Length: 293
Image (cartoon, rainbow, N blue to C red; front, side, top):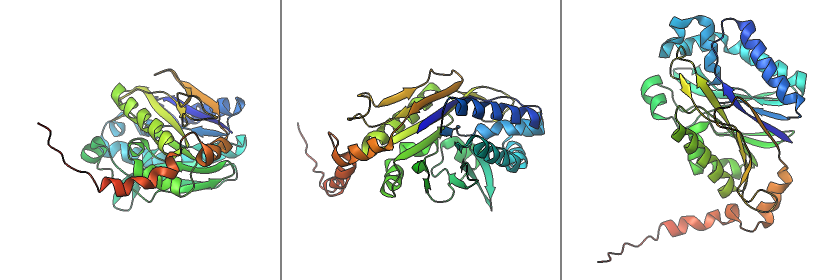
């Protein structure tokens, strides 16, 4: 399959028609270049808040409520475009009211019209302290016509046990939509994505929100790039970098990925990280303290 990961520039959109045109053009561009799976970034849906005006978009609860007002319409758009172009789409994640909680949720849209949802599991400090966003529903593995896919939203990819749970449930491809304000944030997520590909002998696909828009609360500044990573083993680049976009440059990073190569390295790679994972637990209980003076 071909995977397209976005370096997606946040925009101030005045009308629904503007938003629809932007998303339609992005999807059409990736599909025209042969992509089968499109990965949009974390909190890319925040630009929907602009449709409700600057006052709504300029505060925490105002922006969350404003995005919620337009989210059903956006989901209908992604579902329609997925079917029209015969592509799978991970939509930009959004803060979503779920009962008494607000969660960070992304949707996986398939050409058949099926939709799956993945909530972020572990919140960053700004999500906890400023937005009051909570960890949502369970981790999921989506069994699709492209293969078994998991999603770890941004910070989640920095926690190995979350990714291991997906791998144990059959995931061979993990999508990592991200939103990072500063360069160190981008590198934290990228290093996490590459580490998970190494440890679990899988492919990870990272997308990034980029650009500056001071009228959109909490996502005013963003930096990053698209990237697709694999284990540095046979059948993959020795760096583990299958493809990587240019920092803060809008557009798709596209690469072809063969999941048979994942199955091959898991079965008979130069190293067998996933198989040997279970050798860790007994050893971490045997740490001895030695004082050397």
